[in-house]
Image 1 (cartoon, rainbow, N blue to C red):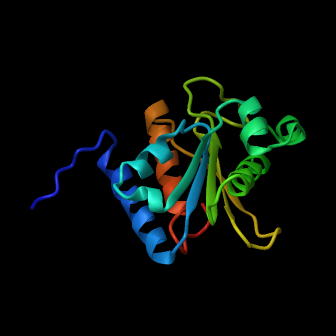
Image 2 (spheres, helix red, strand yellow; image 1 turned 90 degrees about the vertical axis):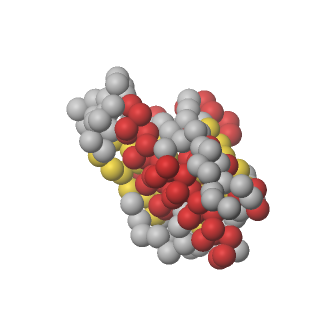
Amino acid sequence: MTETRDFILPAELVDLARRVIEENRAAGRHIAVAESCTGGLVSAALTEIAGSSDVFDAGFVTYSNEAKIALLGVSLEVIETFGSVSIAAAWAMAKGALERSGADIAVSITGIAGPGGGTEKKPVGTVVFARAERDAPSDDIVADGKAFENNGRAGIRLQAALCALDLLLPGSAPP
């Protein structure tokens, strides 16, 4: 029987999500995602895969600063000092997702997808990622920012989602 592609998301996103589910299933790991600028796109991609529920534990869409604070425990001090698009905020989001789920690994995404909201220091296309792993040393911080080409809001969000999925692969390198 031939597989039909009955997905609402781009094939490259669904294909990578399938790899994430399959490889984490094989590794016996559960995953969680904390999303801001992607607005649930990573979670949607993961749940396009039948059987993802035995790997995907939780997805947090924390678009506002208030949601980051209330749902993930990001401190107001971090947001006021570094901004919501910062390594500190992304790291706090990933740690919060890990602490508030049954996952073994959590990835966070926060950024500026545009078309507005950018500044000289943080232009549209600035996206920050972090990955936290249960039982990892507390100083083992995996977080970094990327400056994606401003090819429109949808393009930035797709690039960010692909990068986040990559970080969920066992053995993946920092962003």
